[in-house]
Image (tube, rainbow, N blue to C red):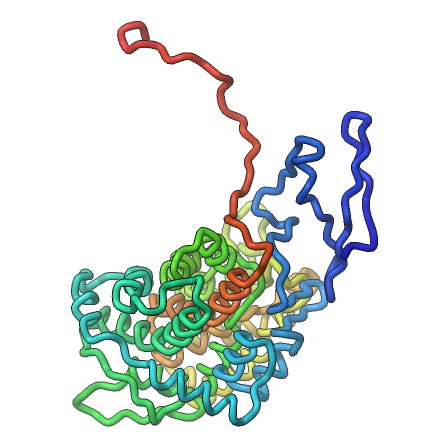
Length: 429
């Protein structure tokens, strides 16, 4: 309930608008009845000043550099928890008991395999298809394979769909990778934990034994955890908007993956690695630093600063620890890209220009370094992001479906086209 209000005057007429107070964050002006009362809309391109829903899942304070999942700071979860426990937290609202966690892990693990006929679906793509394109198609096609979990009105089917998506997404992402490099698909190994299983499906081959390094599995698990949800970002809003029409969950998640593909969203860590490769060698860094400082040069250093976090990205500190651990394990050696990354990080943390503008390395910078060191091509960076974010999309989707205020999304527009005009016959034009 609103205990405050604001007065808006339009053409000498006053309107009282309720002000809603959240648990955390700024107050929100409730304009739901404004059109009906005053016959006006609000104008907010990008919806950057508009709350499209209320949610109990994730909170971000960009000024303070805070990210909470269900109230728990991301630093604590990434340092002390693991991805599947975070999945449980996001889906159900509370940390699980030991018994609940065991049951949840069992349910996820028993759903890791995909329908065998989906192998044929993969082979319909060109051999050089981008893994993200493959994932959009395959996830969307899951509704054709799993008819028993597409009824959004059935809570049990929603639950089954959620477990299936979390369990099968690593398998599908790994299959997309294997297909893109011409290697045979590797079946899940249910003896392995979630992150280790994904690495095993990506890097093992039938001809050789592959053992997952625990340090790499932990780094991958942290990547999953740090990307699990991020409030009402573009892809999450896409999932909610698609879901508002009653579309099945597989279609909604496919829509989220398609949105995530954009370089301004999930493709940021790929763009960061491509920038590092453009720089090429450590001796060229000063040249690119100078270009970044030049207001007349369109060049931008990718992986520094963040649109939401105006101080620092709380995920970056955790990811930096993982990056340091992985690079120490695997070494930068003769890899010029990783050498450039380490030197660029050092300069950015010390250079007055970057420090004064708070252009610190963000989560995309460090996750890109880790994935590069592990041996993933940049084309797999966004699919791994999609894998990580799946649980956040599902949690947001389930919350929306259960919201009594839910209605189909229908943004308005400020029409600036032609006035009404009459059709002119072709012979008279």
